[in-house]
Image (cartoon, rainbow, N blue to C red; front, side):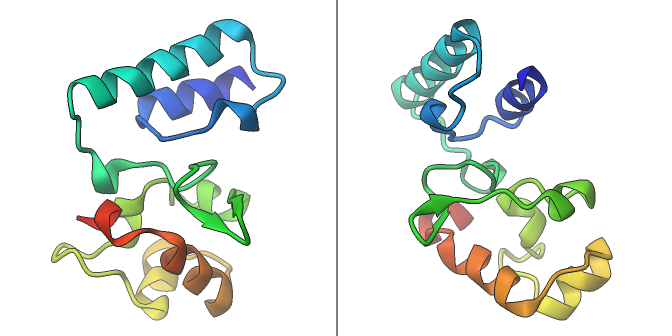
Length: 119
């Protein structure tokens, strides 16, 4: 659990601490403080946001976590983007990450990402 919190901090995610009930209070407080700092200093990270356990990226009103994608290195929104800011096609995604996934899963994740986070 501590490793997941460290990963979220390193990637400056937008996680909801309620998703980690067993996370030590120390790490919950750090995540909350970090959220406050981002708002205070208007830090716009958009495509650097972590895809997983992100309260702004939800499928069926639940945050997502795809272990097979994480293992292949798909962690942030920018991992799903081409250099020009458009999303990878399903075929491009599969070729880039050699990830065993289906079109529907890929489409759900991309559709769940608000446009403002892609920029």
